[in-house]
Length: 128
Image 1 (cartoon, rainbow, N blue to C red):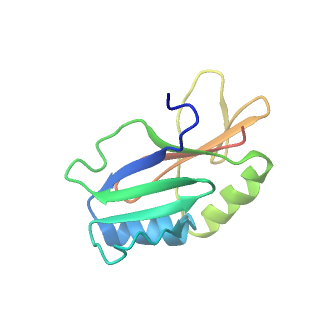
Image 2 (cartoon, rainbow, N blue to C red):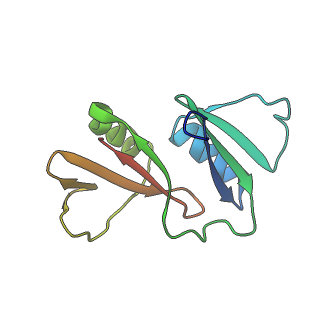
C-alpha cells in the first residue's frame, strides 16, 4: 500500500530560529516553498527526493532514538568533514561490533556518524 509512496521525516523543535540555522545552514538543506513560507512554527526542507518537516513542538528533544538517517555512500568522509567545518558536534556511542575512529563509528566497511540538532534530536549519516 505505501511501498511506492514518498515519506517525510518529521522533527519537533522548540526554537525555530535555531532549527532554521541548523537545518538550512549547517546541514545545507534547501527550504521548500509551500506558500506559507512566513509561518514561524514550521519549515519544510528538501533532501534529495525526500522532505524534512521541522515544526514547533512542546515535546521537542524527547526522542532518544535516531530521528533521521542519510545514506550518503562514498560521499561520507566529505560530508562529515564539511559538517565538522560548520561546527557540527558528533555523538560517540559504545556499540558492540563497532569501533570508533574519531567521530566515526565503523563496522567493516560501514561507517556511521551521529549528531544532534539544537533540540537534541539524533541524526545519522552513514556510508550505506
